[in-house]
Length: 229
Image (tube, rainbow, N blue to C red; front, side):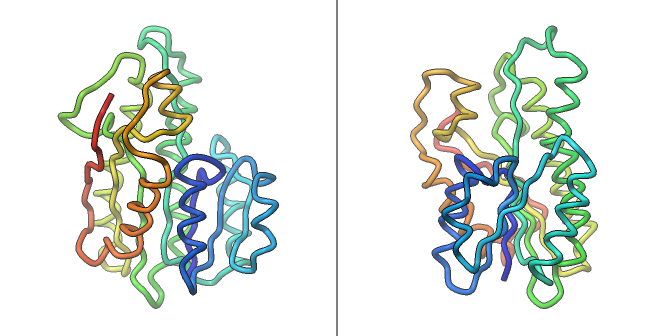
């Protein structure tokens, strides 16, 4: 089975690669704007990296064609790539807002759409969208994160919509809304804050959920959080 992970060069994405490569019988395809960070892993027969720029729509079509040369079936797609702007609402420009939505909403939408041709053929496919507690309804919200949190809210609803759209195609869709995890993105949002959960710990949870969660969940938006700053 092939696992495709976006935003894979650092933080949770990089730890997800390590998690899946330890599992027998799995092939991992990492999508990242910095594929040079995977040079040591490229020696492994079950690992491939593809350069991806999720701010450019054509990049997603190019990625899809390359994936088709590496595998004929994708079992799991983890839409993990994310972009955060920490800026007061009244100072966010339309260009910044568009970039955040391109990476956090448009890219998961288009990548999921393009990879459908490889999913659900034999085994039940699973699309796992990585959301945020900032985009979870009723959760605490923080100044400066209006673009990021609203985009993650859109991703949550997209996950529910995909479950309905794909229910007859042997593909499940779920969204995990993460709380505070020690990553570079967290530090960009909350400088100096130390989260109780490491990237490796969260990756293990996401990895196990991606492998087994679709047996019991579909169209669910699930909070995964010990704390929210």
